[in-house]
Image (cartoon, rainbow, N blue to C red; front, side, top):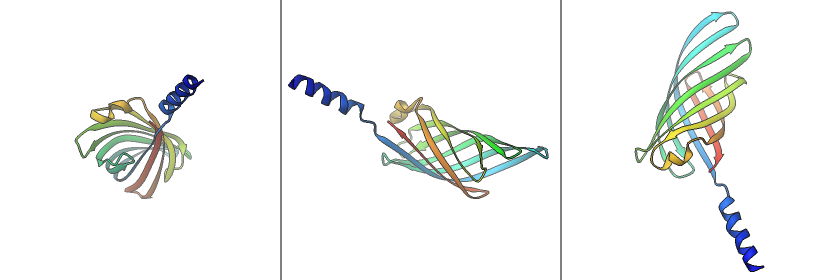
Length: 144
């Protein structure tokens, strides 16, 4: 019986997921292309400052596009981040059918160096809120 309890405790401690929280603020530069009255496409160049729940901090940049067709807005943005130890990671941010001034989506870790290698393939839910046309605040949470 003691063996069964020990095995259960070992397995449960291995299965415990750790919350990972990433927060950033960013400056945005966007360029518009009006295709029709109902279709607007934007390119985005974004400069980021960030912190996370592991005690890291850094900067980054994102490049991507958004499309607004009628009232539906979708985003696809690729980001590259650098931390205080010069480790890097890359994400893809996607969201669809949301308000342009705020929204929720999925951040997928595409690759990483150093401590971020283990994040590859990780998917995190995110929320973003725009203060104005050039400033946003972002947060994602996932389980490591």
